[in-house]
Length: 228
Length: 85
Image 1 (cartoon, rainbow over the protein chains, first blue to last red):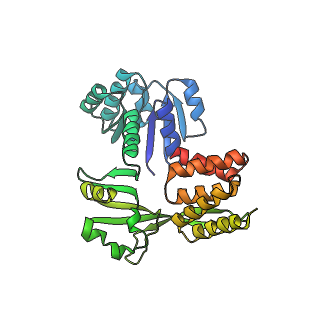
Image 2: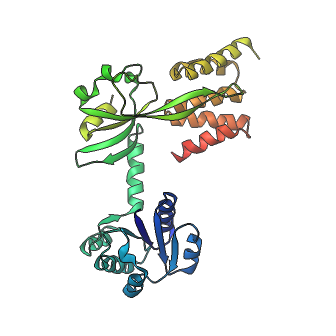
C-alpha cells in the first residue's frame, strides 16, 4: 500500500490527508500546531506534533520510508522550501509542494520538488474553463495535444448508434465511456434517476439525449465536437 | 384537478421514463400553463432538465418545488447536488 506523509495541516493539508485516508491509504500527518494535529487524530493512521524544519526529527520519524510527501505550509514560504530540500535529501521519492505563487514555485523546482501545486489558481482555471465551456465537465491533459474530456453529447447525436456516428473516422476521437441517467418511477408517482457508467461502449450502443461522453482525442478534434 | 392537467403530467412522467426528456419538458410546460401550484410538476420538470444536463433550468425547477413544498427532501438533494457542480 502506498504511504503518504502530509506536512502542514491547514485547510489544504488537512483536506488532502483526510481524502487520502478515506481512500484507505496509510497517512502520516505532521504539524507543529498541537490543535491542528489533534483534529487529525483518529482520521489518519498517525498524527504527530513536530517541527518539520528539523531534519533530525523527520529522519527519526522515518519520513524517508514514505513514497510521497505533500508539503502544505500555508504562509511560511521559507519553511516549505527548507522542508522540500530536506525531504529530497532524505530520499523521499516524490515530493509535492503547495506554492504561493510563481517565484515560490520557481524556487521549489530548483530545490527538487517533483510536483508543485497552486490550488487557488488551479481551481480558478478549472472554474473558468467550465464557465467558458458549460458542456465540458472535466478535462484531463494526457499530453500537450491529447486530452480526455467529460462532455455532454451534442443533441444531434441523440438516437444514433456509435457505429452510425462513426466518431473515430469523422473526428478521430474515441468514446472511452458513457455516463447515462437511468430514470425510474417512485412510489408517489414522481420520477428520479440513477447514474450508470458504460465502460468501452460498442458500436451498437445508442446515444440518448443527456448522455455524457468520456472522450479521448486531440484537443482540437474534441473542440470540433464541442462546437456542434 | 383538471383532467387535461393530470393527463399532461402523467404523459410527462411517461416521457421521462422513456428517456425522451425533450418531449417530457414540452408537455410539462403545457401542464404548467394550466396549473402552477403543483410541486410534483416542477419536480419532474427538474428531473427532465437534470437528465439533459441543463443545470440552470433544473435548479430553477427544484427551487420552485421547494417554494411550494419546503419539506421536499428529494428536491433539496437534487438542488444541493446541482449547486455543488
